[in-house]
Amino acid sequence: MTSDEYNDCGPVSGWDLHCHTVFSDGTKTPAELVDIACAKGLHGVAITDHDTTAGWNDAQIAAQSRGFPLLRGSEITAQDDHVSVHMLAYLYDPENEGIVELFRSTRKARIERARRMVSRLAQDFPITWDDVRDQIKKGEKTTVGRPHMADALVAAGFYRTRSEAFAGAISSSSKYYIPTPSPTALRVVQVVRQAGGVSVVAHPGDYSRNRRLLSDFQIRRLADAGLGGLEVWHRGNGSDERRRLLKLADELGLLVTGGSDWHGAGKPNELGENLTGDDVVAQIVQRGAIGLVS
Ligand code: AMP
Ligand code: FE
Ligand code: FE
Ligand code: ZN
Image 1 (tube, rainbow, N blue to C red):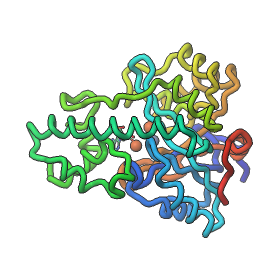
Image 2: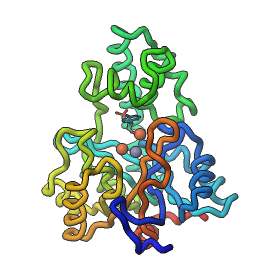
Image 3: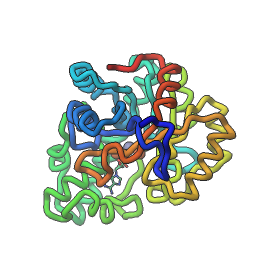
C-alpha cells in the first residue's frame, strides 16, 4: 500500500507526526512510542512533546536500535489575537538560541501558571502542588500542563479519568482556568524558520479547544512568514474545516499533514489513527536542518 491512497481521515498509510510522551503530557516513554509505532506497521513516527526536546535522545536511541524511522519535533504553545494556537515544529536545530529561549520562557510560565491554577482548584478540591508533582514522570524534564492537574484530581478520587476532569474543573471554560502566557504564532514561525525547521499549525480546525479558530487571514499571514504546513488530518478538525484547510493549503502552497495527537493512556486517540503521506514527510526532511533518524 502506498500513501497515494486516501480516505476521509487522510492517507491510509504513512507516518504519525503528532505524538506525546512522558516528557510532556503523554503516559508512555519515547521507547514505547517507537515500539508501538513499529508494531502497528507505521512507516515512521514523530515525537512532538509540548515545548521541549527532552525526549529526543531516548526516542533516537530506540529508533536506531530498532531501525525504525523517527522525525524529531515538538508542539509549541502559542497564541494569535486571543486564539490559542499549537504549532508543530520539525527538524529544527535544538541548540538554536531562539528555540532554547522560547522553550525556557514557556516552560517557566507553564509552571507558574500550574501553581496558580492549583491554588484556585485547592479552594474547592483539597489538592496540593505536591499532588500534581507526583503525576509528573520525568521531574524537571517534563513540560507541565493541565493533564498533570487532571491526573492529580483523578488520583484524589474526584474524577475517574483525565477526560472527565477535562470536562469538569480542568476545562478551559471553568472558573479555575488560567491560560499559559505564550509567544505569538508569528514569532514561533519565525523562530522555527531561523532554527532551520518546518512549522505546521496543529489541529487548526478544532472547535473543542477554541471558541474561535485562526481565520484565513491569520493563516495567510503565517504562510507569508514561512509557515510550512497545516495539520488537516486530526480528529479535532470537522469535515467543513478540513475542506477549508485543504483549499487554503492548496492556495498557499502549504504541506498537508496528519497525526493522532497520541497521549498514550491520557487520551482516547489511537496511535496512527491519522497519518501523513511519505511524500510530505520527504519534503519536511528535505527542508529540515537536522536529519531523519533511522
Ligand atoms: P495545557 O497546555 O496545559 O493548557 O493543557 C492542554 C493539554 O491537555 C493539551 O495538550 C491536550 O493534549 C490535553 N488535553 C486536552 N483535552 C484533553 C482531554 N479531554 N483528555 C486528556 N488530555 C486532554
Ligand atoms: Fe497534550
Ligand atoms: Fe495540541
Ligand atoms: Zn498535541
